[in-house]
Length: 586
Image (cartoon, rainbow, N blue to C red; front, side, top):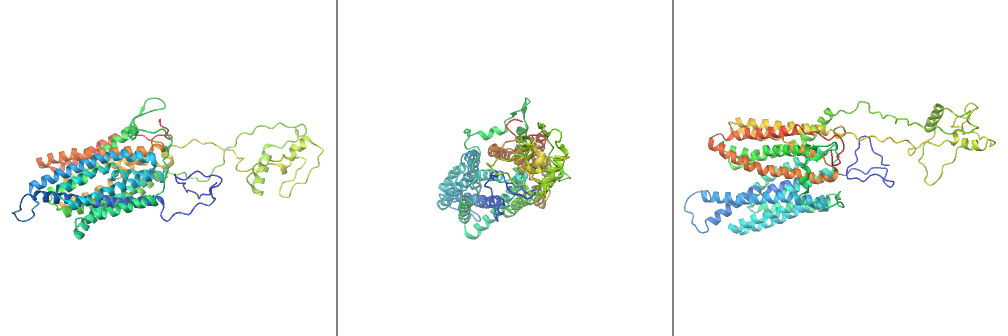
């Protein structure tokens, strides 16, 4: 048995205690595994945003060099600021973005497949390994330049099939789900998203500064070094978690999609909770995924923001979002759970209910002098308080009590009892010296039914937070429609992140519906839904923004985003948590 302090929770990845388990719990590590995952996510967040600004600028430069390879510049000012170069750059960037998005979608399936076969650690450092190779080829493409360099960069986006930012976030979420208890899982998802946002915000600024100070190759070289460091750190310092269903029947490549398929109920019918939860998550990301880009477009086209001021606004949005998810989101979840599911007022343990004892068959000599049950119970309680209990010795039979020997041989002399046991009398001839000493192994065990999920760790509040966070996000986004000054854009970039907890909350609620061995597939399904929503919101609201800009009312696009958020809120209203532990059927 392992000695634990009151309220201490055993981590999910620890094996159950056995006879060789040490009595004293190990000391808490100075850099525990969960913090290592946070640190790796922070570094990778910096890495994937380190080259974003430099990559777009390099496409413009290479397009400009290719254009003037057969022409001579005769004007004044920026030679690349002509319509032909800008349109060609836009087409090249759009092609690269389309390949990147498609390969990232495939990477979500490959990452889930790697997690189920070789574990989350192997899947995680594989993401950074292939990203480092892609970054190395981009450095070579920068030295080549021209159309050939752009072709190399566009082609190397195929590496995203094996390693991308989306796949890394999926692996990091799977790691957090394995290392976290049920009570802390949703909050830890928020912290993970927060540190990744912090890294992304720092990466945008650091990449631009490094290019300004050390040249156009500096962001790519710095990103390559960070990716190599992340890969080595993941191999040697992240814990290994064996896949839970490695020995089970092999699943198909598209198995994660089955998570949101309606499941059969025990009493008949279909359970649509996961389906509605997936649709609600889709509309939530659809409503909020394009908001940072729309802030940049409105600020640039309507209020005349320059690239540096637009970059400051984007960094502000990411840093505030990271602060909210890492510092504000976990206390909101913990305090909300305590408010919604209060702890019992009387923490003293109750005695187990007394089980009915079978009546012994009395012998002829003790029939008239058998002790009453109350007296035997009092005697046993005094024995347990005066004489310390000890565990039973294995393979050593217990001796029979002297009262039993007296029933077979009534002429045996009575031995005087020890001084710490009540002496026998004519009224109570039972000899307590032979009574069996109560121990932990002999106590009755009461098998209690498992409590519902929302009673154990307050998952009901996670669902309520998910619903009303989407509602609040829709209301705040709709208010941006009335923006009339540049400072309104900065205010929106700083206020909107305070309603950005829908992502970790949706992951925490979804995992309440699936058993432990399906959590990797569930996280992969959520990531796929979010990625599909991001692709859809770029096409839908990008086209809508162009139509509203032609009509002279570009800020109305924020009202359309708010309407999409209201649809997501309505889809989540019928969702109900499972009342029992998930076993595949609700």
